[in-house]
Length: 120
Image (tube, rainbow, N blue to C red; front, side, top):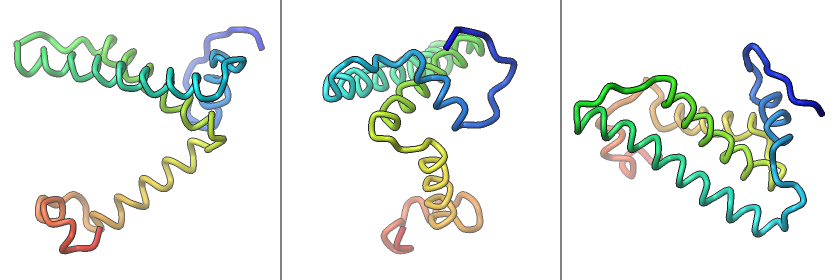
């Protein structure tokens, strides 16, 4: 597969396939999983740091940098899913269904605070 820029990704399964072009497929599975897990933690930290500097230190929030860091975090999420042959569409579907069960009428502080009471 040759490298080419795309205009817009609208299909998570297409993203998953395209992202795998840059995955270290020749790496041993456990090592690859370790790198992916640590990479995800690192990228989540970079996103958190941008937000911390914005909210806590008065910095502007650089949207281009935020988008890039969120994309890097997504790449690592995709990598973990791909290692286990989990389609990203399955992850997103399960998440939306979990949220619908937890918050059937939209977000509620009451349901968030009292999850056990509502069985979610």
